[in-house]
Length: 404
Image 1 (cartoon, rainbow, N blue to C red):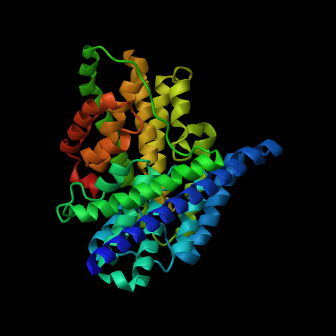
Image 2: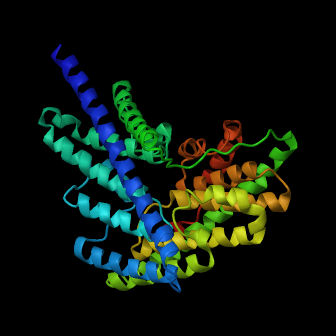
């Protein structure tokens, strides 16, 4: 009876943890959206300032540089956070509040990064802190941090299965949790996502990528899945080449934190002035691309995608840190729309195949890739998306591009 009582109590704590995680994510994204609205909509409507984008991004880079000089080079990338938790079972929580600021500032000035890296680090730290306080469950502290991270990923991307699968897929050192642990994972993920959706409803806001719909295609259209997959993989090579280049520059300028941040802000501002769609995470710009792709044109869509792949890596390696998932998804959709115009095919079909192969090539986790993107694209395209994700995993990336 004592063990059952402890198990039920631990389940309750896990659900409460999920609710807290969902509330933190919702609050962070709400503040981010309000800040972006003020900085990029309200202020420009009140004053006519020349080169506003360049000025805001450059000054923002300066502020970020000063912040990092004082608090450290945070947030860490998602892979680093996941690796730390897998290795030690916990994540440092002494700098949680400064990490929140480090994650928020780049997003406010329109950096081409997503919020997942910063939020995952913050939640992992908070979960480690909670685990340290729950002396009664000292053996489960490590599991609690991993559960919190899964809840974070599942909520940010609105995909419970992605939150569960992404941290464990293709990791030889990770064993699938036992049934009782799986219950805990999904209790946290679903309670986190549930409170996130509830807060959205209560406040009348919508945060997240919208689902795409398309009409049924003739079977012959699916033959285009092969060239579209190869195009997505080619875009993945561009991503790794750009990451290698910007990573090399970062290493050589490691001591110049302020200079790198200001340079990153300046490049962001210049890019945003000429190509506004290259700014921000891309989550909310996907609908704009789908609606206006004919007006934008195939060539410009390709230019926007390539520049954004470069700009995302520039932002990350100059200190305007964040995640790369949302920008890469946007680039895949942009390239897919370009292929739709060139081949005369359905835009959603092209976007689904190209995006899946691009994300799959960068992530190297086919199942997690499909689980992530199935909330965006129609369920009937899942088989062809799975084909693209598997092909993207098994077409190798040169080791020289994967190492810095």
